[in-house]
Structure formats: C-alpha cells, structure tokens
Amino acid sequence: MTPPTGTPASMQAAIVKNFGTDLAVENTDVPSPSGHQALVKLISSGVCHTDLHAAEGDWPLKPSPPFIPGHEGVGVVEAIGDQVSNLAVGDLVGNAWLWSACRHCEHCRTGWETLCESQENGGYTVDGSFGEYMLVDARYAPVIPEGADPFEVAPVLCAGVTVYKGLKRTEVQPGQWVVISGIGGLGHLAVQYAVAMGMRVVAVDIADDKLALAREHGAEITVNANVADPAVEIQEQIAGAHGVLVTAVHPAAFGQAINMTRRGGTIVFNGLPPGEFPAPIFDIVLKGLTIRGSIVGTRQDMIEALEFYAAGKIHPTFHRRGLEEINDVFEEMRHGKIEGRVVIEY
Image 1 (cartoon, rainbow, N blue to C red):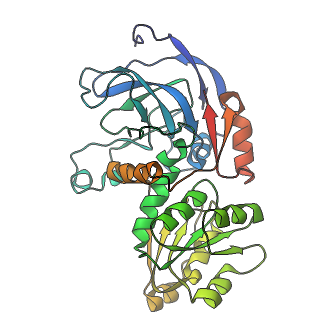
Image 2 (image 1 turned 90 degrees about the horizontal axis):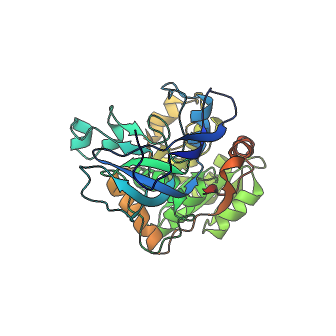
Image 3 (image 1 turned 120 degrees about the horizontal axis):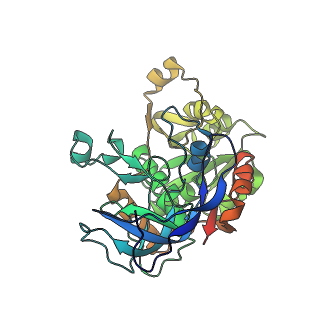
C-alpha cells in the first residue's frame, strides 16, 4: 500500500521476527489506511507485560511473526479511510488491545465485545504502536481527552482500562475492602482506580518500593509477601477482603488469593502468567467464593477509564524511554525492575 501524500514511505519500528529473540529495531513500510481505518503518527506508547508475552510466544494462541507489538499508543490522526466518519485528521487518539471485533456475534450484541471470538488485538494479530506510525480501526480507537499528557495517559489505554474493568467485576462496593495483588504497571493503577471508586485498598507485593508506591496512591494496608503470609495478615487485620484483584505475573499469587478473601468474596484474575494455580474445591465451595477472569474492557469501559483520568483522579507513574531501548526494557520487565510503566517516546 502507498502511504498518504506527505507521509514518509518508511518508518522505524520494533519488530518481532522470531519468538524469544530480541526485537529488531529497523525501518519498515508505513501502512496506508482504508475503509474504517485511520493512520496515526505516534507520540508515545506504553510498554505492557503482554507485549513481552507476545514477543516470547508465551500464550496458546500465538501471533504470527513478523509483527509489531504495542497497544498503548497515543498519536495524531494523519489520514483516514473512505468509511471513517467519527475521526478527522488532527484528532488525538490511541490504540487498544481490543483493536476491533465482529460487531455481530452474541458477545458483541450484548456488551461483551471483549469476548468476541473474531476480535483483532493491537500489537498481536494487528501491528501495534511500537513504531512511528500505526493503523487503528476508527470504530474502536479511544479518543484521548482534551488536555491529556500523551505520555501519562498512554498506560490508561491497557493497564488502566484492564484494572478498571477488573475492579468492577469484583463487585466490591464503596467502603468495602479490595486486595490488589501485584503492584506493577497494572497494580499501581488498580490502587488508584479502587480509591477513586470508594474502595479501601490492601496492596500485596514482594518489593518494598512497589508497596511504598501503593501507599502513595492510597493503599491503607500493605503486605510484603516475602516477609509475611499475606493471607494470614489480611485475615487478622480485616477478616478477609470482599474482593481480590490479581494483577501479578507469578502463578503463586493466584493460589494465595483464595485465602485472602472473606466468605462470599469475589476473586478476579487480570494477570496472565503461563502455568496453573491450585484451587482447593472445599474452600471455594464452603466459603461461597466466585473466581472469574477479566480481560481488558469494552469501548464504554475505556471511555469511563479515561474520564477518571481526565478528572485528575488517575496519574500513572511512568518513565520515558527511546524505541531503541525496547530490548533493555523487556529485560528489566523480566526481572521486575520497572516502577509503574515505561512509555516509549517518539
């Protein structure tokens, strides 16, 4: 495809060519929009743990190399396809994990488009935002609130909307307790959303600096799981939480969640590490627990998550890095050395 007039023919991008190897930062063709697509010139892109999973081929449904990861991109619309009616050149928009869906299946018709079996995913089945340009489906691309910092808002487009929807799925009410397990890119935002939604927060992690960050964002109780048993601490201090949101990237955290919860509580899984977790049937039945998964959010969830940001209630902790540093960022991510979120600057 030929790029629009005035747009360069090539761009720099970070490309997964083979699973488990370094991304290749090199020139590739700038795509051209058609139909419902818009071409966006990137300003920023958050780096999600999902991007690392994608690059390493961790999940059963793998993308097909070569591809460009990234699904927290923010940029300016530079050209639109002939069927786009809701975006214009110059608009500030983002991409998202839910790049598009079929719009016709039962899930799409009933407000569960994130479960659509024909969905396309940004930076996974469709090239994403680890490049100077990207395509978005204008029907699904989030419009960035006026006055937003394009670097600060980028993590809201995946980490933010994911934990926001996950917290809704815990069904925890204002004034009740929720545990946020894992205070990384997702978890530090989950603490903020929970506080903004009126929940009382317990933060669990294995790093004191991340627990300090959780306290800065409003967590009332913090537990270092390397020092104390979080289930014992939480049962002793608050008799168990009404809900638990697991954003951690280690399978052990998923099994721990069951004993952190009080009777009748709900556990929601956001994190996606490979592997399995122990699920004691007796405890689940006796305590009347609900365990459910939650993957990102719908377009309406995205609007709501961005509205919390626009209202000044959500402030992602982020660090700017260059695209050429992406392999270093992934290595830091593997070892849990990132506080908050890394955001690529173009």
